[in-house]
Every structure is written in C-alpha cells, then in structure tokens.
Length: 304
Image 1 (spheres, rainbow, N blue to C red):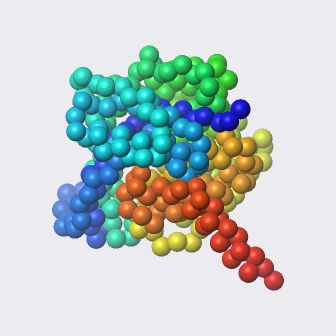
Image 2 (cartoon, rainbow, N blue to C red):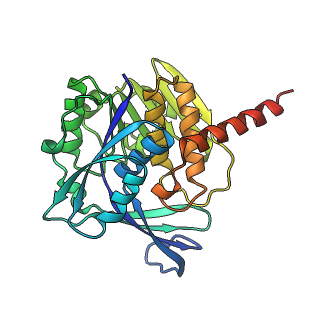
C-alpha cells in the first residue's frame, strides 16, 4: 500500500520583515524588506511531505472567510496537497508576524484565528491514510482526539510538539513518533539531564530531537542515532523545523531506515534555510537528493 499522509494543523499567512537585529523588549528596530508568505506549521509540514517527501498528502486545516486564505490555498495546490478546509464564521484566517535578522534567526508571534476552531468532529474518514502528522497550533483536545482515532484506525501517529508546552500522558500514549527541538524537549522533561537521558524518559516508541545547525538525534528501540548538520550559510531559518518534520515523516512512510530518514530530513531542512519564507523555501525531493549526492561525494573525497 502506497503511503498517504494526513496532516492536521494550522494554516497562517506570514507577515515577514527583515531587519539587522530582532528587537528586544521595549526596543524598536528599523526594518527593511516586507513580504507576505503562506505559512502555519500544519500547512508548512503538508507542503514538505508532498514537495520534499514526494508522498501523497492531505491537509485538514481551518480558515476564515477572508482574503488571507487565498494565497495559502494557492500554495497548497501548487504543492499538490489535497485540502480539507474548515471555514470559520467566527474567526479570521490565522496570521504570524515574523522578524528575520541578518544572521537568519527569527522571532515569531502567531495570532491563531480560525486555527482554534478546528474541532474533533472535523476529522475526515481515515480509510486510505497510513500516517497522521500533527503539531500544537490547534487546540490540544483536538490533537488528542485525532491521535486516539488515528491510533485506533491503525495509522502511525507523528506529533511535532511545537510550540513548546506540557503534554498529557494520554497524548504521548497515542503517539508513535515524537519530534521536538531542545527547548520543547526540556519543556516535556524538565531541566537537568542530557538529551540522551531526556529522550529515554519519554514513553513514546520513537523520539527525534532537532538540534539546529548541529543536526539531530533520535531514540528508537533503546538505541540512539545521531545525524550531523550540513554546513550552509543560512538566509532564513523560518520553516526549517517544519520541513524537517514533513521530510522525516515522508521518508519513514516510504520505508527508509531511521538513519536514512534522519539524513534526508536534515538535508531538506538545510536547504529550506537558503530561501526566504516558509512554504516558498521548502525544496523539491529532487533537490534534496541532489544535495545529498553532492555531500556524499564530498564525504568520500575526504576519506583517506
């Protein structure tokens, strides 16, 4: 059976300004370029599954009845994502306000809008889907309800626990693959202990931790895996984590080993840092494969 991924999550229109530095509390900085980009963790990860991963992908997301929804839907269509849209009468389409510094770091504030209206009753029939990928920009009770239904239907449940927050044990119990960054891992496990000790404490079959430029690590069946980051000169790190999540889920769905999937997702994430914007930065699968081939040749050239 060919994999079919259902992504359930947020869709936002990103308002992005570039500046020399990200402002601190009470500080005003003078920005330069301003652009809008389709974004939202759910929509970004769906595009990554379809474009970078090359897997048939559906997205369940909520939108307002406003003009902000149109560019997001266009981006999803262009990526060949099949959209299951919920239209909210009460809320506008979600938005995010992003400042990107000259060092490619970003600060993001999200106004969730219609994303909070996505409810347990909106989940479509799960026949034909093999994987469910979710994040935490929709209500937690909705995430839990979807995870339980997907688990009962035999889907593999992948959860990107972002933004960082405490998760109930019931949700962890319904999760097969948990993806977090170091901040999100600390939120789940509390301070203290190494990353290896923290991932071992989580009652999830597979835990994957992204480590920024350092790469990523994973724990599965009592074994730890490490993948170094690729050396690049980043332009904009927005959606790098979302690209990783979508690419990893797709690679696992296609039957790649965990080592192969981590390397593929790390490469896709690195390429996403080379282009401004969220969905606009997500690479095509061929670009990821070419990048990996070039780096494999480079690695071999350094072997004595």
